[in-house]
Length: 553
Image (cartoon, rainbow, N blue to C red; front, side, top):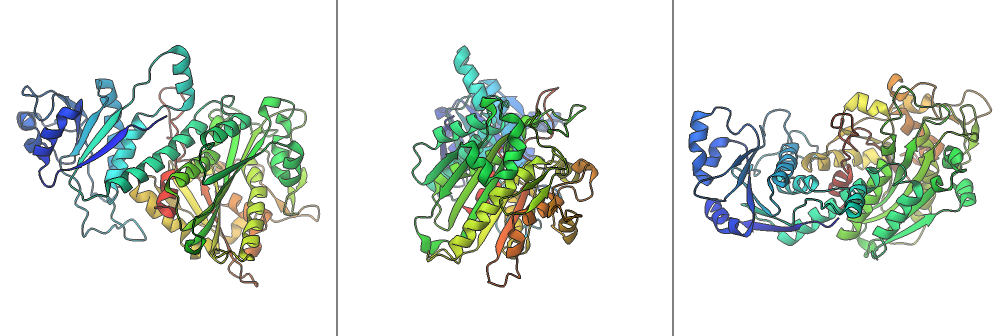
């Protein structure tokens, strides 16, 4: 889905005159404000409303000035408070999203957007972030992204619209009047790259498990990247190869194999910086792509299977992130990625608790719960990326000694939602913590309205999965849901770091090779917490924005 044309206009301290001059080029005006008194100079006709209606300006409202100034139709959109103890950039994201939806309902297709009282960001350090970034330093980008989110429809909706001939209401262009000094080309490039990545993520994450089965997800990705030269995409579809190289994931997908259209796929991405001498980090991303999770033999019951078509949103975000990478072409990072696309089905050949499966690392994994499949499908890829990081470290590449940081991105646990609600969670091992990985994601997410909480990986999270017999080397899970397990979102990372062998490359590695590991549990942030009526929640594209801010911008 193409982005609307974006235009940024500097008002050079002449907001009223600029809006009046530019409004004829657009079919409506959206005025974002914090204090309603700031509206009077721009829209004189609201003065009586403010004086006589105490509730005026508390909600999005349509204004139709009799004199048509500064525009014939105006949506006023209040941010709410900005500087209370718990306010953040989502004030702009939320109101921009809501204003965009209302603008489309009103009939606007090319709105002009301005800020009646934009936040003053100079000399105001954040009390939220580790890097002392200003809370609203990216309010303009956040606003644009909020408006773009409001007009997006995922691929399944677009396909239906095409079949039925029903048009989708979108914006053709959006203009932004700003008093900030901005590099327009860079601003549009960055916003477009983040939004394009989020749209890829939503296209994969939103549709039902048949439209976005493992095979269809892989086909969609190949189509989206077919004309992109700086990202190499490889699809593995051979079942014997998957069984050999990714035995834990193969176990999860066994029950799906009798149904050809549900067969697994592994998708690999490779981005290499055009200047290896400038590379500061080698990044590796593993995405959990369980296109439907029944729970397997430990089946989800009492309605808990609902929404499990969204268990692929971690993989969706990784795919989207590579779209963003392709558009920004960063020099300071090499980025490798892989998606494990499987279906955790029920059937005669499903894997069951008590099975012992030998992982790629050689570790014998005792299956404790088949509904703990996410860590299973990602662990062998983690091991593969550990191997590649070691190979790269020992090569003669100019980027060989740059830190290698490996990530898992997954809608992994219900405990993440129980603990942190609608926020993404980041957990570091020692070397990732040394490189402040979670702190960087936290800070970038904060200013780009894609917020993260930092959780902590402790020794107990590794000890609880230790072997209890000579028959296994590690245990995947207990027999309880994560929501009923102490440290239910932390210990899966403890399992993965050991089952993959990454724990051997910590800060105390005797060969001087430490590998960073950061687990991102986006169960809470990959979609909003509740849907409309009895429908499914809306997917968000998180953490594409946070990752972009942390590692690309």
